[in-house]
Length: 252
Length: 310
Image (cartoon, rainbow over all chains, first blue to last red; front, side):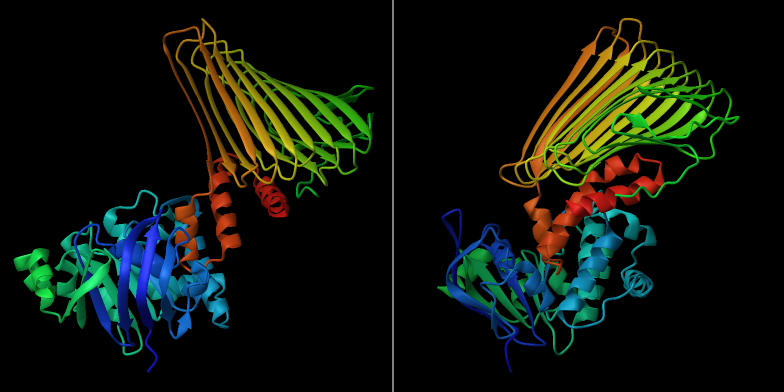
């Protein structure tokens, strides 16, 4: 079976500073992985590189998504092929309504996948159904993208986009940060409803909190730009108890 | 480009001569002479149709318009400047006298089919008496040089003016805009907003001046100018100025110039929206505050089509 994601010996610099230093990761369909790590270990850089942020330079190594080399791909091409990144800090865009944005995104992806784009009426039906599942109010559609949104609303919006775009691989970068318990639950329910035997999930976090609700199959620890340790779903609790220094000792 | 607006009160001036039929009915009295038009709208009326003045130049054109809006009268006035031929000079001077309690929705559209040496220049003066309200929107698209001078004299107490300017110069086009707003009496308000989307090698210069005279206590005045530079060679210069001769006032101004937000572009692209569409959406979002001030729905359509061409 072709892995959804295959990262080999990845080295990434930002403004000449080495951030990711020989990282390897393979995610197969149906698998949920988590990457945990202290601040500054390179987690967010990894998620941005995977989504092909233009500011990050890959010095060496390879990234294959669904069997295809994506190092030369534009961000929109990756998204259209089924790669999704939920942002740690979703960007606010004044003057552009959510509904305009969501429709452009969904139809951009559908068009690339040779599916019929939704007309306005169809789209509203689809989006309202998903919004109800995530307990999002309808007025949200006509507000500017993420402008004046609370932390919980922003993260719900990210999950709504994921459910609408139906990607093959979803990377969730610190999706639990800034959420109260209720918001965390509805976000986790959204993520769990997304899981199936064909899709992959990569959860990036520095706490176990989200992992109590969305249980990963495989947990990696990232430090100094590489994955230094891999374990099962019990690992987050051990880290919570003993700290990252314990993991470092284990790795050595 | 065609205006989506139609009205029996349409006045056309082309290469220094008026082709308009003078209109004289109960609501509008018009005179045409060698300089241009004089329009009188009597007091206490509400026009069912907009007044449309079309000012077009093939070679050289100059129009002078005087509009006298009676007390408590409501009108919509659209001044459309259009030039398609290379080297055309199109000039327009308007004085709009707003009597007490008058309400004027006003719009200037500058549109040029090419930037081949065309100059379009509009000078508009509003004289506002007490309790009058003016909402003016200026949309400038095209011409090698586009000049707009807006003068607003708030000559009676509690008069209000809302002024907005939107331009999108491309190629080597040059945009020169000045707002000159004078608060002469107490309790007047003015809100001014300007947005320029500057592309290619184009340049936008904006001077915004608000003067609060000694008598004008309890003035509220605000001026906000923003430019979006879409290329490395695009230029924008803003000069907001406040001159205040009374202590009991509330005045503010702000000016900023920036580029397309790269994080916003990446965010949109990471959702499968291509770069061109994402850029277009960001520009649409940027100009929205100006477009939202325009209460003439047909203008929105015109502006969106004109922007799409640029």
